[in-house]
Length: 397
Image (cartoon, rainbow, N blue to C red; front, side, top):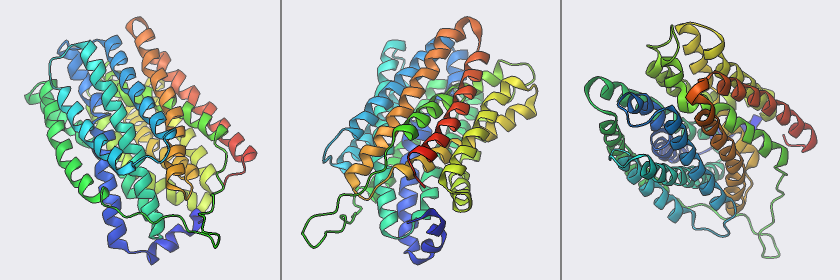
């Protein structure tokens, strides 16, 4: 169905059922992505202040998490006839357990293992929850409700920022992980109750008795552009509070900026989907990528509290929109193919995400964060160029 007709079709679908599915998806992403993954960004400054990690160690921990995310995405991309519900259940359980484990004094080596496992769980939940939610909403002719699903990441980011602000005043970073673990447990219970019992209709069967094989558009240029987008956003998405605290004029904006990222992410997917109704998916995706490049570079190119917060808002207001639009382009009617294709482009995204923290770990000890941030912004500009190539060469809508 063309995206331009989703707004009309949304009215025809069973709204309460669609909203419930999307809300369960929101909770799943809030747990696995907003808390299990980006909770680290919120607590990293205090972990550094308390002597648990330095900037180089922080980069290594982040890279371990993103390596686990890549492995999980590849696992989904190349699986055949996988039981998506079972994998989603294991992902939810593992995400909760790994969040609690970060609250233990395990040392850098063991924490790397924990963050690797947490990354795998994030990918499993993201791919399989998104696959279930997108297909169920499409079956209900209510695909516009996907925006609510993707709001889960912003919800979790904002929640992690609030928790980090609280423990900064009245606790320790390790206590912050335990609080996030408790909140993650609640989210996992509600998400599992709603998603693990979803009935997803099978693809239609032709008169010959065989399900038609969906035409799957190629992913090459889109996947390459999405991989660059992964590198482009991840430096700021991992180190933004540290970046802001290390600069004169923005030292008080660290967790405020991260909270703003989460709040800006809440309506972002809906905004970019709405814009795609008017402009088309590719023009909206390219615009979001260019806006994000500005947001990434702004905190190190312009001085002052205001510029830092504007950059945070632009980052939060685009990264989930980019994810949502790219994954819409990747989906097809076949549920297994959808999971594999989303897993494939997510794996490319994961490669870019691993590179970002490693650049910080290599350069940041002596050179600071300015060069990695500018390299990330340049990657986003190149991503926009490749998206335009994809639009022209692969013929996607």
